[in-house]
Image 1 (cartoon, rainbow, N blue to C red):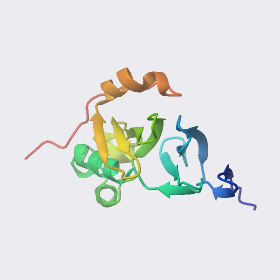
Image 2: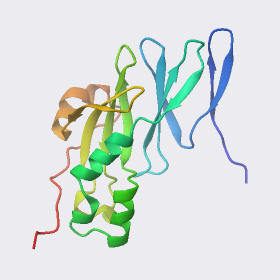
Image 3: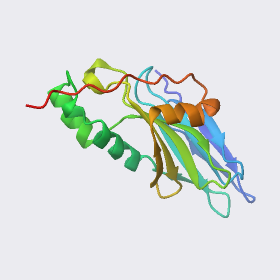
Length: 179
């Protein structure tokens, strides 16, 4: 069986670069100043959504940036998987140690210094009482620092017009009662 691979050809100052994209890549958004872009993708219908950010250097060569680590850690701290009602004991420990919450880029700033990101706990029963919880982040590029964190209702108010889907504001999370 053949494996499909997708690449993007980026032309810079007299040079061109064939950039292999991550499997599941499906949306490309350029910054208005053309100095950065990001690719959204997903590996299934409910989980594995990712953003790959790229910044172009002075010669137009793209550099891939890991910008979602701080947002992933903040999501775990905000929605702790091992405290969720009906959580999977083994799964929650793995999620807490290596979170893979859904991350989708919504828009970049005019000067390519930040990206607005929609973050979601996958809508799967394996996440128990925290499934489908959402937050928004303005993430600095190239640092990956969280510049601003916004609630689900703020994401809807501020960013819905830039989103390709109708956002659903989830019910509050449910946690195991304290003993």
